[in-house]
Image (cartoon, rainbow over all chains, first blue to last red; front, top):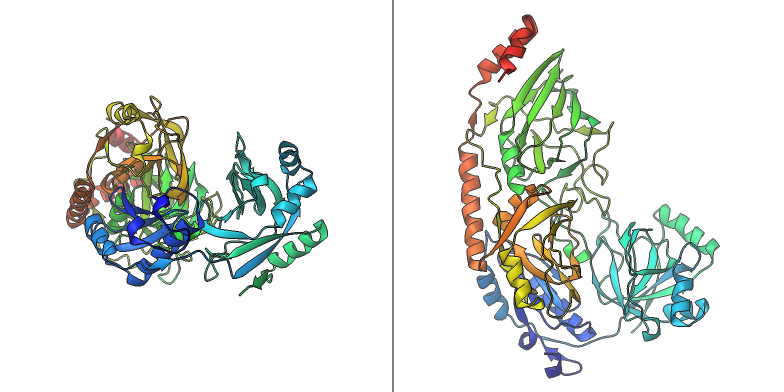
Length: 252
Length: 350
């Protein structure tokens, strides 16, 4: 399907297929790969559907390459909703570079990043080189999911490409900055996890009392900034008081 | 026991897992927030109506064995639904047993015990007026992984104190004269997809032709099944996409997992099918060791099955009536209070 698309700038309707997901949802699939253009199509479709608010649509979940549409089968049917969506003009999309880039302070290595040394060894790099590669990249927020406020950030530099851990950890501490395949991300709360832990950031990514409850939004940029233990501790204390506003760079 | 006092529940034994749940948290799945909500939403709706609440009012969901607590401050009206179990009420040295599917008003100072659940892995204990807890992102459901909602974002612990909104208790206590059967018919209906094409024809046939057993690894996120491994056409991993409640995910081991209320919002394993919404309450009630067969239906059939379920719930709610045996129960309480204890023993004998 991707082969038919222009490298940038494409109409949404032509590429989409509907996939059945029980009787309370269906997926609109734009492709099967991780690709900024497919992801832009997904977010565009989500925005159009949110604005149109067809009867019975309850919410949508954007993913890398598909949009899950949840509906209330008491109010509509998959068939009626799909016909309604097919009739919508979803417009065109193109891939834009992030204009809002969050700077996230990270304490790399040691207890904060217990996998840093092993990752460096496996890749044949020094730990400082791994940190430099990881921190030198502006990542795109593709989607959020898995946990409240967990953002899938890509693309990880090819030289850092490693699979998930063979045996996932039962407990990954909150704030752990991790990598797997071509993605990076931060565990917002303690949870099980199979990504490799490079460091820790004291920032809070989800607060149900805030509007919106998440710090990051799809399309935002993220840059990790290496800091010393003292700065990590200082920011952690400010975050605990609820006063920390992360640095955010705006690009035209 | 003045009418101005607010009732509270003082938790004595929370048992394996008692959480606050309503019909779920919707509108935030795009931010990674799972919908949560009762594993058996039909039980929640019926329990609430038995105590005069709106159907979606937050209640206590118990797993396997119900909690015990002391009622303080003012009387409360309770109803248990979704399992066969008794509410035992201890007051002034007397014990009164009230079956499920029936409302009962409990005076302040009484201790309430919900015994072992039978016929279901979960049950709902609804409280008239609802629980006095803050709403988080439009719901009272506990998000155990996110650590918010419900009571302090976690399962109940001993010594927790849960406030109850003061309800009007002057109406009659209601009961459901013929409660719905909890017996599992052995089959869950599914809609195949969204990634049924990730499996070999043999894998798909295995899924539909052989029974799977519910393993002990089951929680509010998902229920692991055991049976013949399903074979993949091109591997278990997909580029993560969205998950609906009831989705049946199959990781590389080939053993399916039914994803329940607390499931993650997106996931990277192929999903062979999705349990239809009319059968989700039955899936939520399953106990370890239960054998399941899956029967494929179309989306149309699934939507029709849901309409049938909704009519049945409406019929059950319509059939609720004032408790008829109230007089005889009072008489029994009188016996136990004033006469020799042997009478109670005799009454309880089979």
